[in-house]
Each structure stands twice: as structure tokens, then as C-alpha cells.
Image 1 (cartoon, helix red, strand yellow):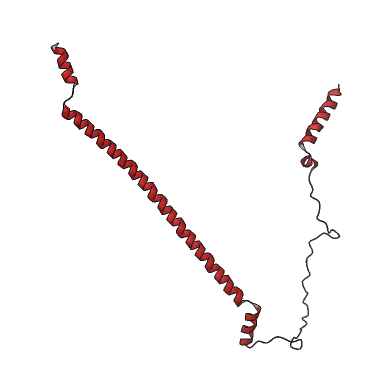
Image 2: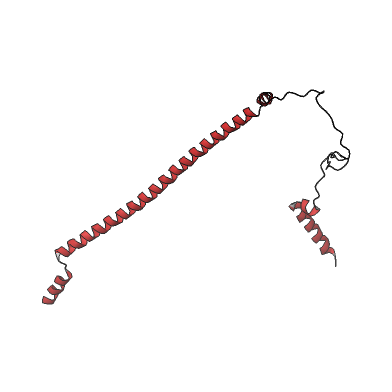
Length: 156
């Protein structure tokens, strides 16, 4: 009986050991929860930063589009017929009359002839050249195979 009590006493742990184990488990759980919260916070911060960067880039794109549109509008105004005429007159240019134009004949000059790439007499586009094998449908192919196998089977 003495042996049994000794075994039971040895199997039992002291109360301070049990408390220490509970405190250790609690601290382990607390550390794990803190790690999960830290990882969650890290992912959330990364997603927020990426979203903010996307907003910034979109704003820059919108700003650049507006600047481009303004520049195109200014260019269109500067190259309009009225603006070009005003600038030309401001520089002292005036419209040429037929009497002001002088034609000079240059010996040996041959004017470039226009290039006509179309085939003579054809106003219609040429029909594409496609081999018959590529214009045959599956149904036609199988029917051809059936008829050729039927005629081949009749031969000795």
C-alpha cells in the first residue's frame, strides 16, 4: 500500500507546478494571438498603402490627361487658319495674287509619275487563292471518306 501511495504522490504534481503550466499555456496563447494580430496588421497596412498609391497614380493620370487636353486645345488655336493669317500679316506677309507668282522652267527636270499599284482593268479585289482541302467541311470530308471506302471495298 505504501508503494501505491508513493506512486500516486509522484504522479501528482505540486500545485505551483500546475499553476506554472497554466500560466505558460496562457502566455503561449497570448503570444500566438499577438503574432496573428501582427500579421493581420502588416497585411492591412500593405493593402492600404497599395490602395493609396493607386489613388495617387489615378490622380496623376487624370492631371496629365487634362494637361494634354489643354495643350491640344492651345495647339489647335495656334494653328487655326485665322491665327496663322494674323501671324503672317504681322510678319509682313500678304496673300499672293496670280500676278505675283512666277513659274520657272527647269531643263532636265522630270516630274515624278504617280504610282498605280492596282492591276489594270480590275476594279474588284482579287479572290483569295485557297486550296480545296481548306474549303471542305467536315461533313463533306466524312462523306468523301465513306464513298471512297465503299468504292475501295468493291475492288478485289
